[in-house]
Length: 232
Length: 215
Image (cartoon, rainbow over all chains, first blue to last red; front, side, top):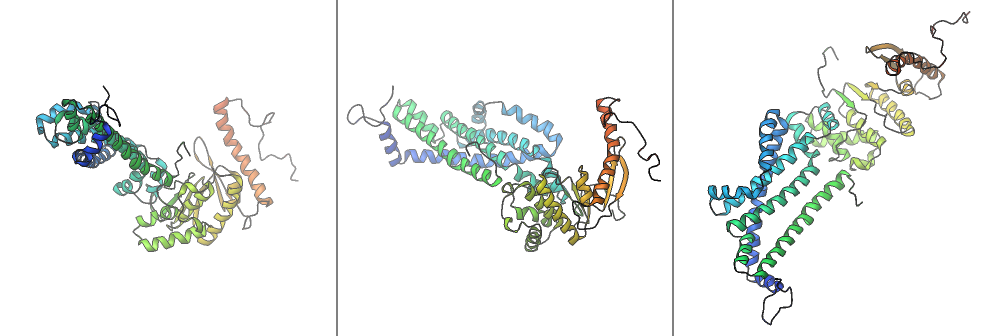
């Protein structure tokens, strides 16, 4: 059931740590990790741009809000992985289908968080900016967008988590390389040590990115704004 | 204003709000420079003007602070600096000191009077505090309610700089209060019932009747 972690069952047998180290040395695990992360990054960046643009349009125009906004919230209720068969039919078994899934999931999430964030900017700040002569896009660029940065960061953190899940699920089912495919290979070879090693890597990467990147950015913005977090 | 009807906000009449409305994502200096940059003033000049006005409100040491590090009184001083740096024709102040404690308010009254001496700006100051109105202004417009409009205009002919113990101010204050009570009774009668009276056991009488005591 459980492969041993450090000390092998029989001499020369497999352990999780041994597989991890060997995997890194011969480059297999590193290559797979790099592949997964690079797809994630590409999809995520595109999703941010698309999501913020859509969020801005929904905030700006009531017409867009009623039509596109409704559409977005409907699409968002479909789990990412349900899109996968459609993606395979459209894009085949390659990287494109995985990136498509990432963009779909992350964009919808960012659109919703950003449009509600833009709508909830304090009217006092808007009034102050208007009385100084600001309006239109200048108002958006200098007041509304900066005012929503804490909420946007939280939204991006969420979208990142969704995207990470989408990458792994897509690679698992689609076999296009990366950590998910390796995981599937481990399953088919009945190599429990490989499966566990990959799960450890997935957990570690997720923790590092969430804790060291997003939480750091959040903390520095909160400190600048003077928002008290509950642990202070 | 100046012969043209006013239809919306514009930067020749700047408002100081009750909550200072400073942008938390900008430093104090950037906040004060915000309006100047909209007017396309070059950045160096905008910075100089902003620093000059921040020094005039005695916040020269705090130009690089973030707004959350300031007290309420300091935030309002930044808001005043931000308004005056734009050199508006009229300064509109909407109960700017209402959220501050009494001592801070006294200090800010003095500072406002100094700034007014120096800049000679027209200031329209909205307040519910009769004492504040009487201590600060040259002219007081008492507004009436239901229907709205101007009830009375008082010219304050006290010496400047104003001292709090001036008897002329105290007398004016009680005159204004007497008139204001009539408006208050109107509103309270609607809320509490038409037999409500502000002063209990009050004989309704004409405030101008004096039973011949002026002979």
